[in-house]
Image: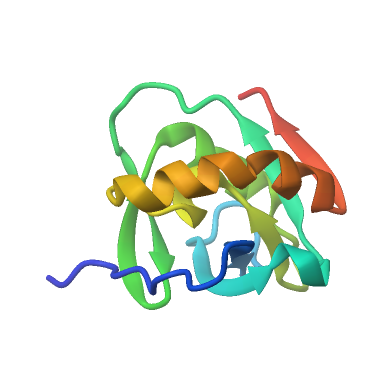
Length: 126
């Protein structure tokens, strides 16, 4: 089975945003990633949560691919998803390519701006 392949970020203030398709709480999580520049004030909400154990126990569908995620972000996305329309979120574990160390370092430096630019910050305590 092929795995999800991130598209490179090209601008210094570029981030990926997670578009979570509409659905009921127990429906499969179907999402896509879009690129946006923070300098253009994109509409999104940031998700703040604890990562939890370092085990990828759940999956979402990301741009048509099965994408493994940790338990906490999986449950947060299920709760935060709208029933009737997509919701655009930023969640570090998915929006940042965690396997690309140079990208991860650059994106971590942008996190303050991400949270400042977000329309709302959603807190997930589990």
